[in-house]
Length: 245
Image 1: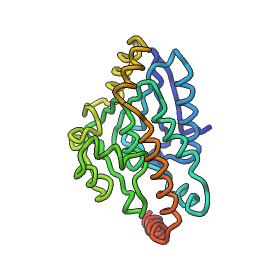
Image 2: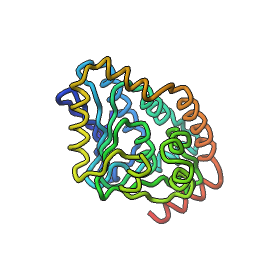
Image 3: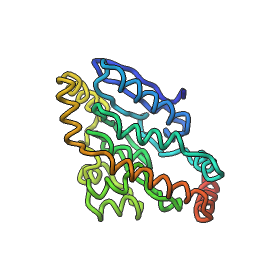
């Protein structure tokens, strides 16, 4: 378990909050494990009909904890990350997100697995994978071109451009830009929770389609990602990052 993941449930909605504000909600291995447990609980509990993922004011997530990445590069396994990503695509209830402020790396790519994502006007989205000598993850190399077209996806995932909230909305990364993203996400989740659950489950499954290709892409990305973490390029990039921090 992790003290940096908190959950609360009301009116059929689980609010899953990343709560590590001192690190801008950078996600470490324990947090991945706790989020995995939360999704498992939500999936098994018939009283929970939707989940909203939220962060702290000003920081949805700064992405993966880079010190964990260093340990992966030294031979550690990425099991928690891999299992969390597979759990995201296997989750069969509505999944929403509320973004306020910073959304970096997995903080951006996990939104591609959400049915609805809301963002405040001050939110920004960035995926500095290539800058760290890595590759995209969370099946974003497959999903982003489908959501936003090749050029926008390339700008986000390869060029490393920062998207502001309106650019993210235009790119279909978020559904709406609103002053209180969390309140609106929770309100939408409660509307969904009040609907006939089996009809909603089947409708969502039809809309999302076969997940086999997404699972295969996640595994391929993890394979490349793990190899890149052990590369000289990545070691140099991480050394430069930590020297600046």
